[in-house]
Length: 351
Image (tube, rainbow, N blue to C red; front, top):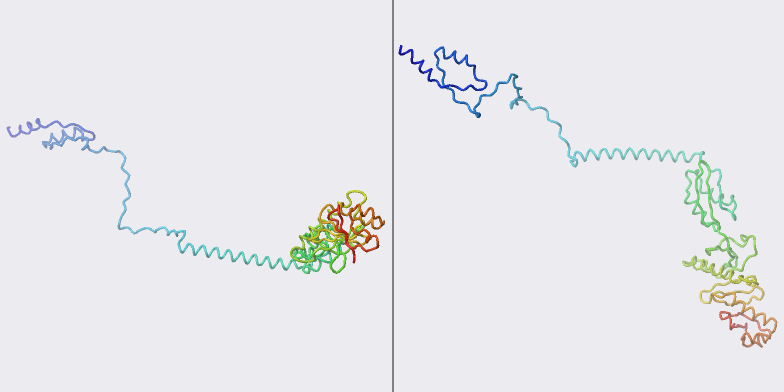
């Protein structure tokens, strides 16, 4: 009896076990105790040692990598921008593109020259604009020799240069009128005076001091006094001639500013760097030096002396302060008059 009661005492002294989440149901524990098996006391579970909660759904299995599995295929290696392989590929592509472009351009050039030389572009006429002294035929005769292979092949710069080399043409522009014509716009030289060359021939002069053509180009009015002394060559010829022409035009304007006009009494105007302007009178062929200013006043003073000599007016010559008046009245030929000082004209006699 004593042996049977011991387990009961021990069972009565079994510590009370706290029920935690997800522990076995009480009925199962009591059943085990009823069978006479004393369960070992379980350690008290704290928050750190709690049993994991049961989840109705099964956890998702994570894929496991196997070190022994065969490695997969790697992605191809990317070439660096400045790697040798990348540079070689770029050079090959660029070289091929350039070669193809050059071949295409060369083919187009060959086709252009073959097509441009065809009869379709042969020159059939020249349109001329701005001509007054030159005729259309004159200009066309200068242009046609420079167009042997059609309008498209014509060297417009050479045609323009040849036109400007012609004395009567000051400026020229040339353009194509496809398929078979050229248009030429010219600016002719306009004569403002006539000049005597060193060989004695007479040429026209424009406002830039360029001599061109001959006196037949002077049209519409009486020819003005001839210019003498223009430079026909040298580095400073163009600039000095332009200055002489400016002085010449100022001279004529001064001589004709009031009545009577005095330019008609002048036959020739000579320019000298040292002495200035020298005039040759039309009626007496006497040279009159008048310097570089006050042209009308100085020429008037010289003409007064000549009129007094012609009229044999000794008193007038004395008033004009002309020395050796008696010799002048005796018929001695006058070589020149220096009127740079209009108040006292110097008379040079031809000994």
